[in-house]
Length: 403
Image 1: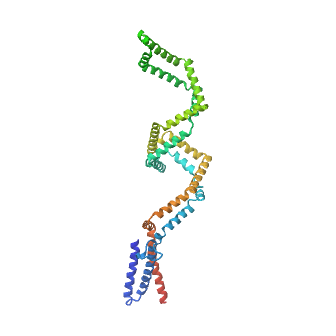
Image 2: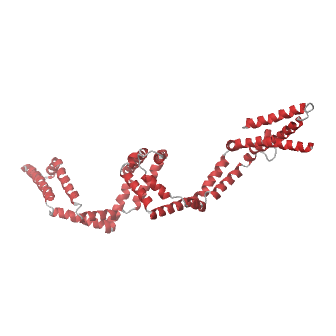
Image 3: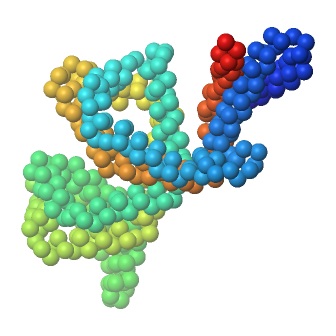
């Protein structure tokens, strides 16, 4: 378009020169000369005006030229304020969102079959890729540290002793401790069998030399092993065994102390703090975070597999509820309006400051090139129109002068 506008100006100059040279032979060329002369004036004036917006014409530092580069900071501030006043105020956003049914749109989206083609599937896949890309792009070490710190902080703040005590008391009252107790008894029996030689050796070492001389240490070892085996068998088969009852009573006392005894609670909290400070626990939390992060990324990379299962059923059920229940739809839409309006009120100034600071950070050449590429074509039409309109005005003035 620059070539067209400049070429038209050069054509007018050529016509003017030709008409001036041949005017004596053909007087009617005076009209054409007047048209071309005024067209050159109009074209040059508009070229100067258009050029003065972005740079100094012919490189000359003429006052009030290169307007945009000289005023880019003020333009950025004005644009930012315009965005804030007309788009990022709570009242404007609330008014524009009044007719938007967020809940209905969300309900239709959640109910859309995962196997259907079209816009809904593309949006879901795009959102899934976005989630996966965000989790992969975030600083894993820093984000993992934040997650681990948050978990550790919550665990340190929470008093676990009463929770453990209440859970143990509930298990005892509902006999849910019985399988654990029987498993412990069976484990004790297996431990005795696995360490029989060790127990016999200990008895032999602790027996007096008289017993060893008389060969009674072996009989003592046999008696101890037989008695302990008999004890584990009886405890396993007899729910009313006295030792088993004492163990259950001790568990009940422990459950009560965990909830009511200050010393017991303090000891448990101390053990908890020591456990959280242990490097192995930190390593376990790191492994937990890594597995969770990997699971989220894998699920996001394959949204169809996730939405085809229980999660998909839950999401479709939620979508049906959002569409069918007017009270929930009203509440969700109201919450959405308030949330977006609140974000605009809280962060609108930061957003417009970002716009202003970004424009301030551009150099004059960058902003000139971007604005000129955006509106330059229309500005060249101004030059063309100025050339033609100027020529018509010159022709009309010449006609009036000859009357």
